[in-house]
Amino acid sequence: MKLHALVYCPALVFCRSVVLGALMVCLSFMKHASGAPGDFDPTFGLDGRVFTALPGWIDYRARTVKILDDGKLLVAGTCANVETEQAQYGACIVRYDAYGLVDATFGINGQAFMPFNPIARSVVLAVRPNGKVLVAAACYEVGYKTCVGQFDANGTPDPLFGNAGVARFYVSDDYTPTHNSSLLVEAGGTLVVGGFCEISGDLRWCLVRLNEDGSRGGAFTVVAFVRAYVSSTTDGETPSLLETPSGQIIVASSCATATQTRFCAVRYLQDGRIDTGFGVNGLALVTTPFGRSSYAKSAVQQPNGGIVIAGLCSNDNGPEDSCVARFTPSGRVDAAFGVGGIQVVTTLPNGFDGFFGVTALPSNEVLGAGYCYVDQQSSETLGCVARFTATGLLDVRFAVGGSASLRLFLNGSAGPMAVTSDPSGRVIIASECHTFQEWTDKYFCLARLKGGPYLASACTLNADANNTIAASSDVMLVTRYLLGFRGDALTVGAIGAGSTKTAGEIATYLDSLKNDPLKKLDLDGDGESLAMTDGLLMLRAMLGLSGDALTTGAIGKPSAAYPTLRSAQQILQWIETTHGVACLP
Image (tube, rainbow, N blue to C red):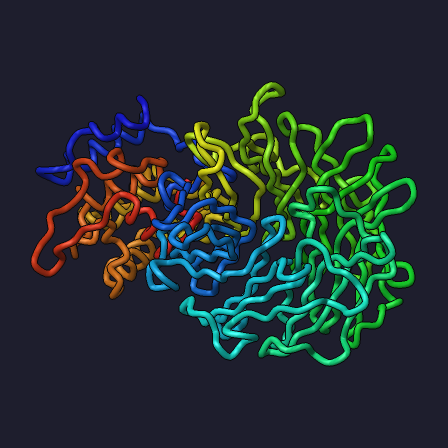
């Protein structure tokens, strides 16, 4: 029996025996759905994906994504306002709710715009504890400058920051800044802005501190003592800024020598001096195998304090592969990660251009995202992701063998990736994408991937409280309970392996769910908890069904008290929010 055949399972009507008999027939034929870590999350957008282009704006290029404390998403990049006499480029921010809908309460119809001219389409994003939103980019205004814009939490430019919401400045009077900027909100509210500076033909990274109002923060200007590497495109090669719990600043990037470019990191004290206790005299370097060079595109700090840098590894005549490396909190190469502190991935599809984004997951796993070509002859690109265990091995529990190539845009190609993750380990990817027919017609594209695997204890629909979420036990128990069965009639043949719960304990627990003010067994939102609707919806949801296959014939009727029932996607979202992401396959 195919999954969609459950729509035609015998109707759960007439009497308890018919309901239970129909359910047992369905369960005897059905297997658990194939939803797994790395699959698109159907509770987000349209089958896990979102595409955004708002009226009056063109050429969207997403470069960064943040999750807010309330679960909403901010995506920042560049776009152009076509309603001006000439298309005006600037930094664009779009806010989405937790499920991928544009939040029209932010800015104007969900979007905020800062009219400065970003170079190389590179925009970075930060959020203050009070909700104010910051964007930064290298910009060109009578020479190369750094521009930082601040918005109130509602997306309105903050008139108290800089000049009408934008601070424009040279990083240093002595050095010429060029390309790309980084941004860090320090615990005390000050900002650290980073970028590349050209010194006698050498590129180095430079840091400057700003006060909360966007003015320069005293004499704090740092010029790196090592040469930075920046390619001719510089897209995505912004030095990453991280803050340690004790307030030190870590810059992670690539450092160039005469023969090799390597992932590197430097730690600075609050006053801008090199922290010589970090790495070797303040510098952390990792060697890439086989004489390859490694080019950093993103970095992140793990919950355990590990410093992870991700990007591209290659040499002049060899293949280009994605790679990720880890330093300990003290700046030593972490020999427990990968091979000698670095892991090179050769299993991703053709033309993989390295990880443009990297995120740290709750249990110290790491996930990198970039783009790759469909085949060697194609210009069509896909999103490519790989998840690593805490020891740097490909996590075989994720996707297929630890990595996946994803069609983020159904009718076109995807560009550079930004990535983050939520507390449950779900992964959110932001990208630019365009149609096959029109390369200049670009969109903000988002996708959310399933996390996990999760512990069964994280799902409150685990009625028998064992180590498995199963339709054949947990859904059976809930359905029997809703039919009024108690005692042995509730539990015989419906208890999963390893459960120690008695019939009385299970009934008491399900009483608490049903009688909760949130009506935690009312899946369709009609105000009632019924086996013929809510029990069937729970069964289908746990089997991985969505859309019409989830709801056809299984939704109650609206009433004056409950005029609007939940849609299929809202039911899945409600299950995750009310009972936990572990409940769905």
